[in-house]
Length: 142
Image (cartoon, rainbow, N blue to C red; front, side, top):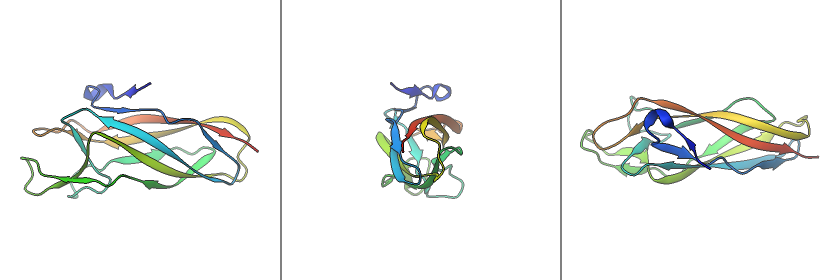
């Protein structure tokens, strides 16, 4: 089931990741599948210019701590509003988070919550920046 980014006309959708099972102290990873509506792009996590809003994923404190992120290879695309190509993502892609479970994580189910910050644009305009709430179901096992 897709969670929708209603404020931007459902331009960016994400599929909640499948439940992540982790042992206390273990390193685990989870992929957040994303899909942009055709004709739109978002700046990559490493935008071409300082003034561009990067794609950022953050996770709130919980039984897991984000230990790093793996973003896809961005595309360099030329748009009429920019003199040089921009580092963007479009279509379907995913962000992988490398997590570390706390050594004292309590066994049982938990929910990790986070935020995905982005700005979607098409060939002629950019929509206002948006922050999308994301979540991940976690099961801590002994």
